[in-house]
Image (cartoon, rainbow, N blue to C red; front, side, top):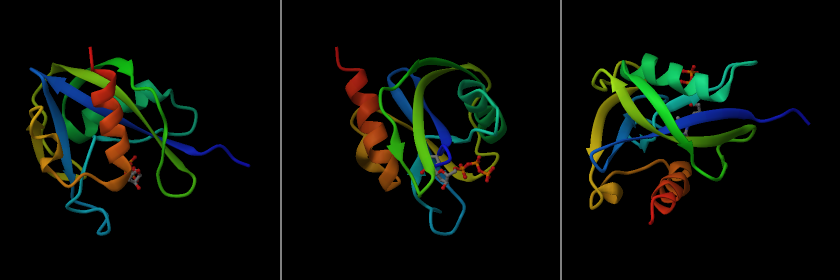
Length: 131
Ligand code: 523
């Protein structure tokens, strides 16, 4: 068995709000919302990969804060891992793969149509923040 490809994603938070990104591709995922991120390249450190993806896709510098406990299956051969993160520089813009970004307040988290596979990850992000 080969190891699954790890897809890394960020729960980017600012002033109590969470950043959600609407995918523009591929067609079967377009219009659905996700925690932004992407695939770890072979031999790449997952945390470095996530910082790289956030720079490429959103044009921001970000710092990862903590891993969110858990790992979620995506399509066969892929798993999703998530870190909380904060902005270091820039303002997120949908440069690649997304056509809209939204900062969601605590009452708005479920107002967007998250990808099915992101729903348990978002729940884990919220659970990790309970006092
Ligand atoms: N997901 C997913 N949720 C989520 C992300 C970041 C990715 O379900 N929060 C899925 C979508 C794709 C696969 O993981 O099936 C790879 O994500 P993608 O396309 O964002 O990865 P990239 O940007 O590394 O892909 P390339 O454009 O192919 O380089």
